[in-house]
Image (cartoon, rainbow, N blue to C red; front, top):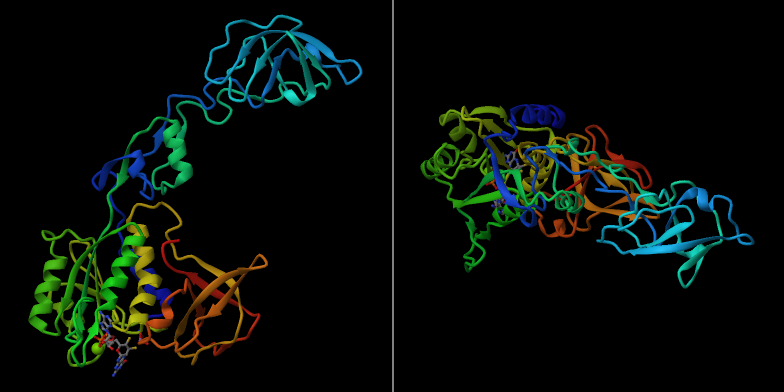
Length: 415
Ligand SMILES: Nc1nc2c(c(=O)[nH]1)N[C@H]1C(S)=C(S)[C@@H](COP(=O)(O)OP(=O)(O)OC[C@H]3O[C@@H](n4cnc5c(N)ncnc54)[C@H](O)[C@@H]3O)O[C@H]1N2
Ligand code: MOO
Ligand SMILES: [Mg+2]
């Protein structure tokens, strides 16, 4: 049995991120939200494109207004009005000003903008009652970005700020990494789909729905193989299909159930029969002990998650989530988001395995607090997993974390 940290290191070493040449596709800017840039972006344009005004006011020559004040205003004649979107027509001469608005191109001869609030206009003259600072309120050409430099690096997620930058740079077609594909299957004779009437002994295959939701929230594509009965031959044929190169094209295969020691727990045996190399057979964690991980010669990675609903989700969040992010082409921040928070009540463990407790991470008076989910913290219970967003991690050999003490907390889900 490996420790969680050992298992994590082994799993990360198996992951080959998508290829920045081969594993890409082109998307429109409006369809690019949440996608990962596969090629760096450069612009032939400076930002700002030209010197422009940061205020509504008057474009002036600094020397004409440098020693004015409320009692001794500078008086300039207004030679033109320049709204945003227009090219100035004249060059400012001594004693002249141009009426200008935020974002408008500053006219030649100008070096400073005076904001409207310290001025008074009378016909074609403007009185200036306070001296500006030299070059004040001018947004200089190329002061944000110089043409030809890298604007955005490859390997970043395209969120609203990046989409804005790409729009400004007129990049309407983008080369992004293709979505990671994840095959998902559930094992168990007791399982039925959500629409069936339950017969005695049957339960809904909730893991399938939960895992698909998790995969989709992470921006990957789920390929569902549905429910596979506890039949060695059928399970072998299904896993063989999912791991083979030709069918479905999944990068990662996830099953749930069938990894413990029972008569019908075939997953480990089948993975070996199919030529998978078993890197992990169990991990010293609770829940999630029977987690099984294998790699195939075609680089596909197989996660045999334990069947208990909480075990399946906890092992997904702890190990599969970072793998999907690393695979996706993200250059950083793919690792699990583990932060320190204050326990709001006592958190207990039997101390034997690293223990994951589900609950809510709350921001209270600027500090993170972890609140355990009410109800049974057992791996068969999925009901109290709803509305949780975090897992507190109790280290091995620690039996109690007291209220107010700090605890490591893994933030789960898409964040
Ligand atoms: N003798 C032992 N028994 C068990 C051990 C052990 O060490 N010795 N480990 C326990 C632990 S811990 C876990 S976790 C489970 C893991 O079991 P499997 O991965 O083999 O899963 P199954 O036996 O198929 O199912 C376990 C449980 O989960 C329910 N289940 C399964 N699939 C789904 C699904 N898709 N959706 C919802 N619920 C599902 C299933 O009905 C069972 O109740 O083994 C313990 N046993
Ligand atoms: O690992 Mo099991 O996941 O403790 O219920
Ligand atoms: Mg079992």
